[in-house]
Length: 175
Image (spheres, rainbow, N blue to C red):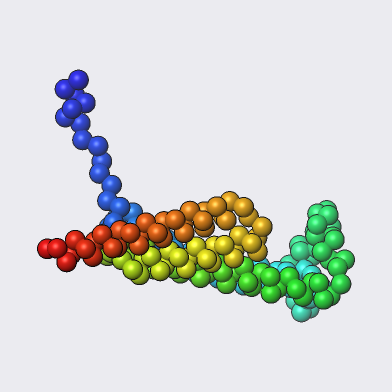
């Protein structure tokens, strides 16, 4: 047993510079741009496919042809819908994307605070509360029950941040 006693496990640093939260913050920053680019590409692809838009060049003709997937029954039904219904697809996608971008931005701000060793603060409680409310809206729009559960758990985490902030402030005043 002395071998196990002397063996050191790797210690993970969760908060501060060069930590898990620091890497997560960087990943969230990159993902914000990735979501934006994918939304713009998806919008262009849907516009070309739903409305049979071609500009006479081979590229848009190929994209429109690829978008006209006649083997997918959902796509065929979508293409048969009236123009007003097709137009409603774009605000729906824009609303989902806007919510997703706001969620990523708020999450990034929280992880930036974690990176700067700011864990129990009023700002983090406000960020967690705002992110939770955005997630509730996102889960309703996407009909995702799992996201709704996560957002409710995040609301509970918000209360933990509030309690931890109160304890930290009390401790700071004691010293």
